[in-house]
Length: 230
Image (cartoon, rainbow, N blue to C red):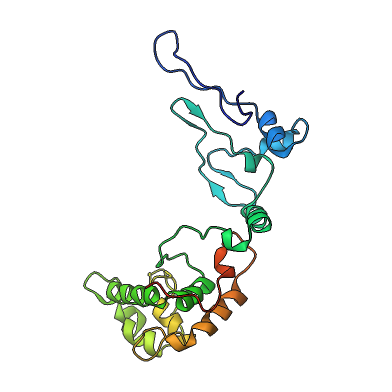
């Protein structure tokens, strides 16, 4: 017996080509997932379409078809957000089972709490990120203009209270330099390497800054004594 959320298999078309699979009705998918009766029209409208805002306001270009397959997004059909998913996983399996979001350790979209988390749990990776940023902003291909800023990047990172507002990328944070942030927040010493003896403080700050949003994951439940793997 076919699961109600599965698309019905496509067979050969009369001309020998593969016909497109027929997707299950949205109402059936919603009812199967939620254990409810027929889905109302509002829930049906929650199905993702290319460029359509998902619940929460973020926009995803979700594919509706690929070759012989059509797609249904059941969690969108019942109106779940990422926060709802995090809470469901944490309630059933425990907060330590919520997957950490997929990203590079030097991701420019990292938030301050994530930088503190990195400093606390993986200071070696933050050291590598700071070195990468320094090479990019002081190397031969850097677009940082000392004339426009009045000082070199190194001078501003070490001495300036802030970077002026600019469209120029000034660091891994695009509008801010991770090295500058690390100095202002006491994360690094004079040699711009992470202060290992402050790791518990960094983890505590990460936990204080971590909000109940779509980045809430297993990192919130890792103990302060976690071992640095790099």
